Every structure is written in structure tokens, then in C-alpha cells.
Image (cartoon, rainbow over all chains, first blue to last red; front, side):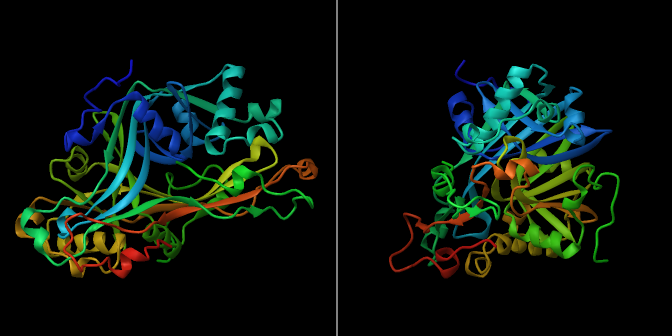
Amino acid sequence: MDKFMLTERTTLRRLPKRGEFEREAVYKILDEGLVCHVGFNVDRKTFVIPTGYARVEDKLYIHGSPASRMLRALGGGIDVCVTVTLLDGLVLARSAFHHSMNYRSIVAFGTATVVEDETEKLEALRAFSEHIIRGRWDEVRQPTANELKATLVLSLPLVEVSAKVRTGPPLDDDEDYELPIWAGVVPLGLAASAPIDDARVPDGIKPPAYALDYRRS
Amino acid sequence: MDKFMLTERTTLRRLPKRGEFEREAVYKILDEGLVCHVGFNVDRKTFVIPTGYARVEDKLYIHGSPASRMLRALGGGIDVCVTVTLLDGLVLARSAFHHSMNYRSIVAFGTATVVEDETEKLEALRAFSEHIIRGRWDEVRQPTANELKATLVLSLPLVEVSAKVRTGPPLDDDEDYELPIWAGVVPLGLAASAPIDDARVPDGIKPPAYALDYRRS
């Protein structure tokens, strides 16, 4: 299926033209993001926690310590909403009212489950690493059995998912276009600066290319 | 009070040394962020929606269309969790297990209420604008009475709030420091590029300084 099915929760009530349900477009946004915000309910209280993630085919993985309140709650099989937001720019209109932001965001609903299978778990951990910085995994010390035990991985099937996207210039009221006010977009994006060596890196070990020239999109 | 009180929800179960409850430190993070993630529950389903915000003293404001599902739900006085996350870097350790991210995040719990007072509402809208790009508000066409009516502003008192912060180099297991693997931090931050003029800006109107040299921190 190349499109996500619309549901009650993923149907946009406002500005439906900003909606995007093509699977490949959704995956592209997920693959560019680094942090997701996971929302869930415990004892009728809502929590929203930022965390890393990775996508493998039609699954989203998150992970952490088995002691984490969030992961323990989610592993029990409760309803979850995972949101990823990429901020692309400030949209400066001629009127205060029409100011906006350019962004691409994903909202995924579902029930997360604990990954018990050891092979899938290791593949998910590899995916977290490759998602954040491709090439790193093969160069570092691999997880031990104890480290694997100390990591809880949750899997969320990407079934009920939508994207919302705003691009382009400000949209002002007709009569405002004549005002002598500058209008346009200030593009924004996540940028890396030069890597900082850990103090205990042995002499002669230089930062790898993927750290020297780190880019997201 | 210069510190936020700890509660059941804001007490960190894991890595409590990453907790930060000083009011000024929390405000500094909120004032640097541009997007918050608002979590709430409707009919026992959790939603997490990204949106702009602004802080004025000990209140956090969010706003949008009165038609917005989120704002209508929240305006009814339901429990909300607002999270702001700033990603500061990738932490590349010698072992896969100790990879991490540097970040500063805020979680605020409470009940949002609709701002009915017209003066407070206009001040909140001014704060949204100044929060995103200082100096812009005084140069643009001000909101009309109809535009004000078409904007719903919600206020969340900053009472039950905590920050979580990770900074610095990777922390590896003792025996891994001898491995011939580069380790360190790739700093990340939101960066602006050159402003893009709207196609209908009149000749001779140049981008203002706040758009030409936009910085967040």
C-alpha cells in the first residue's frame, strides 16, 4: 500500500491541504528527524517525552533503559502517539496575523510492544545508530549480552500515520501586499559544527568523515 | 520562588543528576525553543501536536484557530503536558551502548485555560511574535478585531515543571578507552540561512537586520 489510510484521528480538521499520506513522503520525514516526542497516558495523566528513534520498513523503534517510566508503561501495551517535527523556516508576513512557520511533521498512533526477539532487537539497535550517523555502527564496540539485556526496545507498527507540511512564502490578505513591509521566509535547519574530540582519544586517531561532514537532509 | 517544586510527575526516576529545577535555567531553555509538543487526551486517546509558544513571566502561551481540535479540547480545561526539546549534539562513544545525545528539554504539566481578557490576549500575541523574531511586531500590520476573534490563546501556568539536560563528552566503560576508536561530540544547533524575499515585496524594501542575521541562542 503506498498511502496511509485516513482515520478519525489522522484526518486533519484544519487546513487539510497540508496533509500528506503518501508512505514514501512520510518515511522521508521520519528518516530525516532525530528526536521524536512520545505521548502516553498513565493514571489519566498525559506524558510527552523526547527520545531517539529509528524506522525499519513499516516499524518505528524507540529504546532506553528497562527502568524508564515511559518504556515500562508503553511496553505494557498502552495507546501511544509519536510525533516528529522538522522546523524548516520562519514565515514573515506583512500582518502579524499571517505569520507562520514552515515545517514537516509526522503523527503516528498505535500500540507499542516490547521487542523480545534477540535478532530483531540487535537489528533495531543497529538501525538507531545508522539512523543517527551512518557508518558509525561498524566501527564501534558491539553490544555485549548484558548491554542488550539492559536495553529495552519497543516497536510501533506504522499503520495510523499522517504528515502535515507547510512550505513556501507567506500568504497575506490582498490589501496588505501594498504595504512597505518586507516579507518572506527565514530558512531554518539543523546544522552541525566541527566535531569535538573526547579528551581521552589516543594520539593519531582523527574524527571520521561522517563526523567531520555531518548533514541531516 | 527560584526553584520549581518536585512532584510525583517531575521527579526523574532515571539519571536524576540530569534534572534541573532552577526557574531561570528552565526559562532560558523555554526562551530559546521555537516549537513545543503539546500532549493531551481526548476520549482516552493521546494526541501530541507541535505548535509555537511563548513565555511571559510564569505563564506559557499557545495559540491557534478556534477550530483547532487541540485548542478546543485544551480550552475545556483538560490535563496537558507541554514538552520543549533542544538538541545540542550527537555523543559518539567507543561502544554502541554508550552513544547518546546532548540536549536540553522541558516538561510542563498543568491545565490550560482560554485567555478571555483582550489586553492579555494581545500581549500574548505580541509575545509569540517577539519570541520568534524580536523587533518584527512593531513593523507589521497589527491584528484587527476580527483577527483577534479568530485566534484562540491558551495559558498554562508554569508550576509543575522540570528540565533535563545532558552536556559534555561520551562516558565509556573504563576498558574501552584504550580502543583505537575516535570518540567525541558532533555539536548540533538550529541555523538560519539567507532570507528569501516574498515575490511581491516592493522594489527597494530590503530584509531587516533581524532576518539577515537570525540567531536563536
